[in-house]
Image (cartoon, rainbow, N blue to C red; front, side):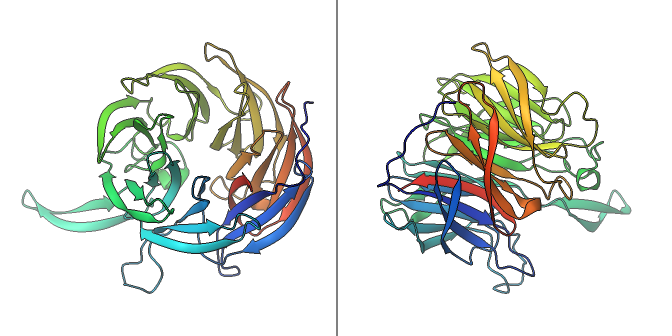
Length: 397
């Protein structure tokens, strides 16, 4: 196993976004990590935002952005609205200080992606699954119509000091998938409306790729002052593309939530066109129960892809050839999920890729694993108690 010696002059900090509930306020934990994930040391904690389900760090301005993954209650300031919050990161200690926040129109902001060079931040707002029944008079009859939340993609501008300048554009997604669908997710309403679950800038910042798991599509937008859709790639019904990650400028990997698949694709950086290369199941051949993959990460060496399965309750790794062919190599077990929506949800690598940390929500802990750069395998290191961990962002001060 290839290991590196880390300078004692630098600190590695894991920021852990958590979900609040009736017992805990939520917020963001800052935890120092030493010895390739062997030791966790508490640094600080914020008690807001309550639903810190996704984080993104800007090393240019030392700003940490977080969603507050709410649905607005419609009664005014009874509860804070869905928003994106900016924190200044202290360059010596890693302690967070709130500097700004901005509304995130659309329920449940669930994903952030940063384009630091062009001072942009993208946010994908998932929306809820519940419907509202409206009684209308149509064609001479009284009938019921059903209305679902809007799902949105928000483009924010960022100031040079890290504050959120404002909203440049909002895309309100349209359409639906198979409704009701065969998935037990959300009682068959999982694809009754759009659900943007990720919005990722291409490496050069020219395009924004949006995974809409409600309509089984990846939408590609040209990024300027506004977002202009230039391409949509349709997946088969009840596939549900969820999270997407680039490896270089022309290769894309993504998880498909309902079909429990991992896909590799070519991306044309000139046109925004996508081409499917391979697609395989994310679970072992012997697992036949409900499963939903969530996060996806590419190891810094580009040779291995990792994802977490909710249902199989595993953190799995895959090899990929230069042609994009995928092969599952192995997995480690995580805590048993209460249900796929309440399970390990996020993990990420250390900056050098020597270890990773997973937010094992069912176990109320974060767990570190050594990464073997030769075969991709994982070896458990240690754990640290955090209530309802939802997301991990690791930085080096």
